[in-house]
Length: 165
Image 1 (cartoon, rainbow, N blue to C red):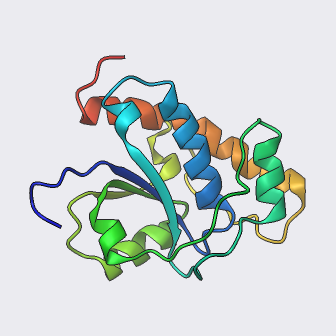
Image 2 (image 1 turned 180 degrees about the horizontal axis):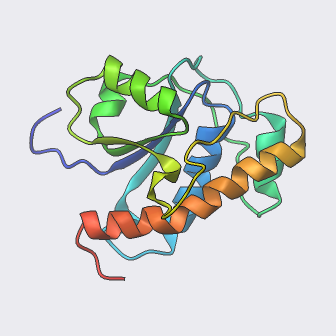
Image 3 (image 1 turned 60 degrees about the horizontal axis):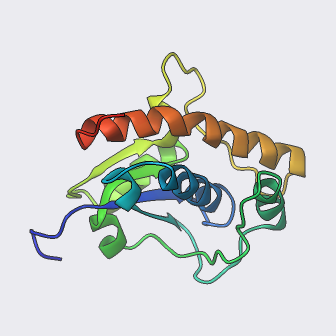
């Protein structure tokens, strides 16, 4: 990647890229669609620190998003690669462990590596626990914790990209 290539990717990362990060990707892409440029022009993707390639999202992840009229069924997992990480303006992990693994694997990234929920003011719960194997109610709680994180994340990106609301 050349030095002139703009960082225009928001990348959500979890463990296997079949629950949390794909839900975050679809939720955030939906939120960006209502924004004006340059926010609406950002690309959004997801990956997993220990993901296999081409796995579908879990059934409960799909159902949790279907309940808010979003479709996760086309998703296929992908491992986090150096190339993908180097395209990201912002990489958002679900847990501190994800953030640490990313920083350890790719120590010289041009963008930031943060937690998705760390932008919420006075927030005691900055991690998003893994719902894998849980019932639908837990996936819905996970989804809602991501939805809560989106407005302050958009505010952060507006400031970072010097965009007026």
